Image 1 (spheres, chains in turn brown, cyan):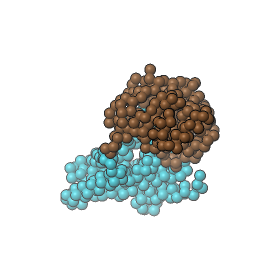
Image 2: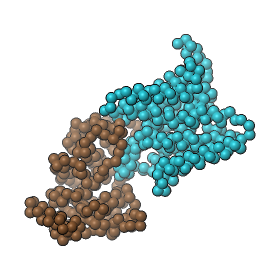
Image 3: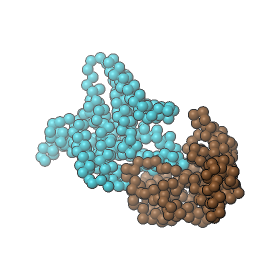
Image 4: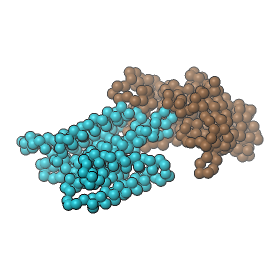
Length: 250
Length: 268
């Protein structure tokens, strides 16, 4: 079964097409990377898939069901590009992750037994075990990304959407982050939809790549789909040269 | 001390004491969301809109608390609806609804014949004029509000933190936003007779803001804000009795004193 199926998706805003006739599918347990220049509609695509943005026409299903039905059972994890929140919000990391732990509707003093332990174990999985009692506003970019990953996977989702998850994170932090995603994909069979500007990341971690520029420019295995012509048409001449060196290096 | 004991033997002081206890906890409890979501203009608009309800109640001869609650809920729904359906900013929508309600209230007041003291009680509040029925209504609203907000604390806090994440996690953001607006409208309205239209927002936001200065977690925030509200309510009432000053402003000034004390804490 396909983990995600998008058919003829069109998104329009202020009379302008942001996305036109996007069709693709993702097999369960695969990592798919979405690339494209700034303004290509990558974030719009993820937001439309997740129901955070209305679309004009087309359909989106995850595991055979409309995404909004999957959402209600928290089978979808999402790490946004830039998390907008009030940094003075007096909230600890464990409280933030606890918002997502079921039951969602319950009195806070009737906490499920072992909830705290589960949250700490999860944070340890993402290399953030020491952050449980830290205030969310005091975290660095890398720490926040790890916490957001923990929050996104706390309910054992089947599909994870990552919108430029490593932006603003140092090189070492990025390595750790992508290794974690790969491990979750391998160990839990997690399907990952990832937006990245870093073509190195795409070659190293993705099974499939989608190249987007308001329309679908290419799709397939990175080494096959990302031809010199495709890269040049999307990113320009300079990037074509970069890709060659990237492939040679690998 | 003897004087306070003597005062506490009067039934109207006992009622005022119970009312200040309940409002002291209820307003900051809900006020935490007002502060975290930066909605103080909304609560101010709701309290002033209730003025139209009070005026309408006086003209129609119905219970003023009931008429003010109905109008406050209507105005909060109107603000939520217009914010959702137009491209106007939230504060612009609030400004339109706010001025519309005030103008309507003033127009209706002009139709009243003679001086209606009870209408002006709501403007400045009078905790010493609280009746048994007012107390009962306050108790019911307090219990329902606290139970509802505790039961739905996760979705309310998740939406306050980030709406998109809440949506992806399957929370009906629209439903909970309307519910929060209605709760704020009801809490503001039932507190009017105690604190008054002009000052009720202070009791919502000042103890919550003071708690936010100190709190490092949600648990601390809710605990501290209720303690500050409670202390403000009781100390303010006692001070007003002792100093023979108006109760509402005295309660608010005590809470502002607490707020400035919390500001002394070194920045984290």
